[in-house]
Length: 344
Ligand code: PEP
Ligand code: MN
Image 1 (cartoon, rainbow, N blue to C red):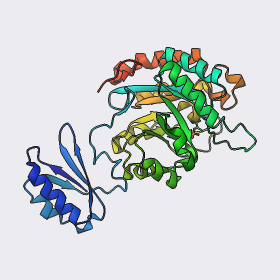
Image 2 (image 1 turned 45 degrees about the vertical axis):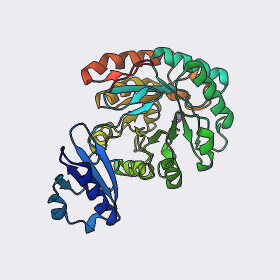
Image 3 (image 1 turned 90 degrees about the horizontal axis):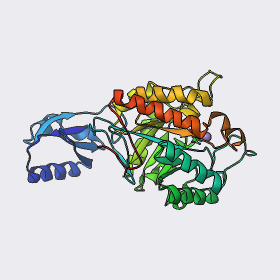
Image 4 (image 1 turned 60 degrees about the vertical axis):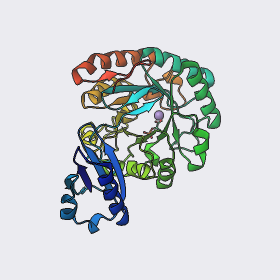
């Protein structure tokens, strides 16, 4: 349930309302937006007499929220959430490009790719240290050493870093990682989501291989219910019967997520297609559909990559993708986030 408050209200009246709601065992979040002030209620709202609430002086209107996700719901929070990562913003009018290899393979590899993608317009660096591989015999990532190499690349380039967590016991190792990625395979690892809810660090939450949009939003809700509101949703393709592509990019999920939720939506065209030559058209399509950014796999030598070489772009092709995106963004009312400047 949300209570929309009149713009002019006294703090004392609001305090009385909050006390009354707390007495009904309801948790409240107060969101002061540009156009309105909204009080979101979480808990068993069946005891709340709507007519009684409507009669309170400072109440403009009351709405029940049917959807099971509350904190992630746009009805709770009408304005776009903008997440600030060391001055680089995600959400709102910003378009943010994150790039880097699937896996960190060596210090030289990650530092070389970091410098190249930064030069081409990426503002954050991705790189997996812990890799979720289908085969136990495949490269599993450099683990703690991989995180150290990523930190070295962060130090050299100043770019914030994004890396995937797979185990709740590893959280302390991610202290200096700027955005923790929850991969598709862990989207419903609820114990992990609950722990991440207790952190004050942005989480890039990827849609599961066979999960609905509502399930993705419910996973975001798990993290938000714990207090961490810095969630970036990521559409990375879903499993269908098609075999020419690794997954099927659900472009319609982008405007739907933007309508249903206030959280930023980033698209991963690399895992969505599995085919490097499809990354550029899908990146442009994602931007046109309203995405707030892209996370793209880039490798200095894709044919020798230890993981996901077939979908990785060379730095030159990546540069071309960013250039084309930057030509398109003015038509969409978005500004590319630069390493030095962002917008509200
Ligand atoms: C990745 O980003 O490297 C990854 C494993 O992605 P996903 O979880 O989307 O498969
Ligand atoms: Mn990958």
